[in-house]
Image (cartoon, rainbow over all chains, first blue to last red; front, side, top):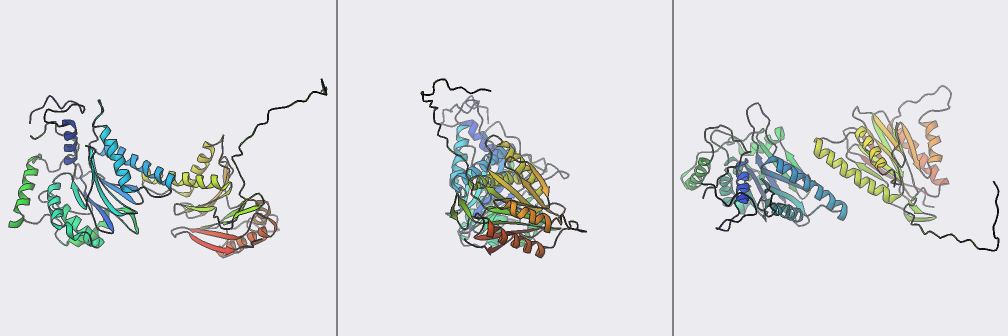
Length: 281
Length: 232
């Protein structure tokens, strides 16, 4: 909780073998609103909860198209996300020009990870404050990757990042075995149920605050927002807000409570642009 | 001006410079005709070098976005690369502005792109056809460095000199008594296009093999038709 003497720059190790600046950057990702990715054998899907700074304001865009076969969901500093997404777009176009084929997802994610790593080692630089969930469809099928400010990138069947994402992760861990052979609608429904679990009290999923991105074998990456979402929200029926938790889900509820206590419970709406200076040790 | 040879028995030798010729002419012909609410872009598919044929089916007209087709005559490699560069710019436009490029914007962008290589040009004589934002057919023609104009019809390529006068008369209604240009219907335009190409194929050695016709209409996917041409 106290400011260390080892956290002033990214090129300083702490005696415990940690680089605090990188960990602080990872915290910034946790402040962003939730984003979820999951995939089946044919499709890869992204879902995100959009935040707005007030009732009169617009909702912050969470999904960005990179190329016809690839898109990302962001959590954290939006400006960093913009820079990274422009870089990814340029790389995808360059690869397409050179090799006359869409860039394999693994390759571009590794490039981003290497780019992020530089900022964790060079003196004077700061790590990117944004986590990405990358979905894409290439020769080897659909993929989902997570890229974080630490420079790591892993592939997942399902993953969630951002505020209260642990609740979504719990749902995903419970149900992931059903994803592989799920139809597109079933996959999106799972994603929406997971996303719903990240909502605060008395909030619900609606066509304004939700965003879905889909890519698949014969389906270019496209983002669904606004009215087009209604048919997917209808898959949830009436239950677009969090249901009351039963006894077997109490441990999940406890972990949610632990997450919420870290945040400012006075404000109705969270602000996703301030990273805390202290870590919780 | 007087010429004098100082010492006629001395041999004068100048250094011989071997230059790499960066350009080639791959032949072929294209044309574009704008209608009231549609546009037709047609080109043959023969690709040649000198007196040889490289391919009987090497298309030189490409769809750009969903509302424009561009036909490129001259050096095929430059045409192909120009098309790839335009496609990239089209993609960035979509990313930056969250909307598709209009035909008028695309026409201006092509002009700029060509002039950017003013001192090592794309050897590509382009003809772009599409439907503008008001739903009216549009044809834009270019020279190799981007000088452009919007017209109602234009022929380009090796048989341009054979086809353009035919279009001036039949589409533009030029030099006919009591006749002025009015936009034509699609079936009339298609039949003029076919006649133009079959006639050009007769007399121009670089034109023939197969005819591709692109039909662009507002709000519909671009339609593509193929017709065989004489292969001699």
